[in-house]
Length: 186
View (cartoon, rainbow, N blue to C red):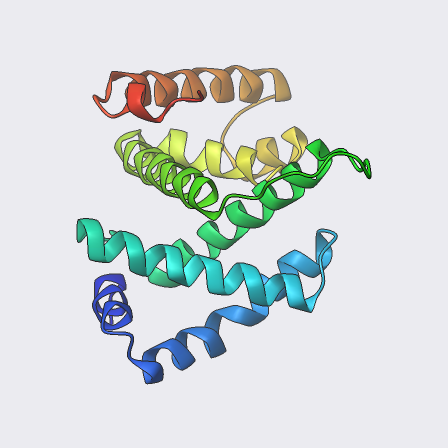
């Protein structure tokens, strides 16, 4: 079953599919959140927000997923959790000040983040195989000496130069896309 099957079934709010998605994906989302300053309740909230976000967006836009639904959902949940952590950093804990939490604003940011991720994935697929390999290792925070060992490059300096050129190429592709200006940071 491809990702688009799950989108369609989620839009129907099929409880069997939701349970299947939960059973398959919640453990990895929970593990990520527990390893990043969260608890089980946080993981449950983020997972639910992620699913709701996907359902709302699919009903509104009928988009498709080119890859795995599981990877898409996990990426959304990770992004939601990172945003949650960042918002806690910015909050001032002062008895006299109360921060108003607007769910609509959260959902808007999440939608923009999803679209950014989709643009990134689409453009990442357009770069050469060699660049994909080296950037995948780089984004996974693989040390340069390991990248040298796993590739045909002769030194860390050559790897650093190649990473720079590949990142530059990927950035150019993203910036040339007509969607870029509407998705860049405000």
